[in-house]
Length: 114
Length: 115
Image 1 (tube, rainbow over the protein chains, first blue to last red):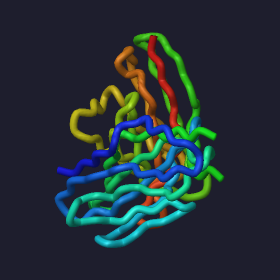
Image 2: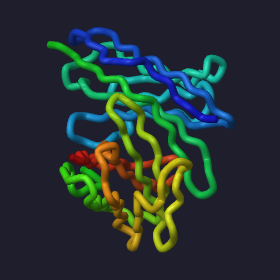
Image 3: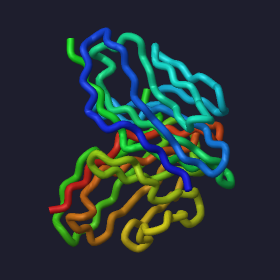
């Protein structure tokens, strides 16, 4: 079946530090991969996505590359800011009839200290 | 701005009562909406797919009679937790499909606490 595993948090970093949040997946087909971010009191927002192997998704300084050979989609950012503090969810989706079904990881909380 | 809203954001109820949670698509007529449940420090689990004008499709293990879903219009889906018990306490999140099948927009969630 399909599933997503991401590193447990919380992850605590100082401002301007390098961020990596690991995400691996299992899938029966050819899924699309996503990173969502959830700020306190808000809904999940799409951060970036990649729809096929070797694609790189990027947004707001965050990047993730779809690695089929390692079934991974690790999130990286070169220099984090306090405003990046949030919970990050890795997800995959598979086509199912007339919509895509999403599977989420457990979320990783990021705390960035000034 | 937000494209999906939920109401209420928080609700506390007594065991045995029923609670209705509303999910509204603010900018798009959504024929398909989704309901998720999120336990503390766990992932979002899809409970059901809400289809406008027809019955919802429930995931395996989700009780249809316990979690009633109604999608009576293209902008509103409701989830009613019937005869709530403390183990139903959770964070419930809805979403709507975007213009492509590979896109979903999420509401801010509803925190349900059953005493």
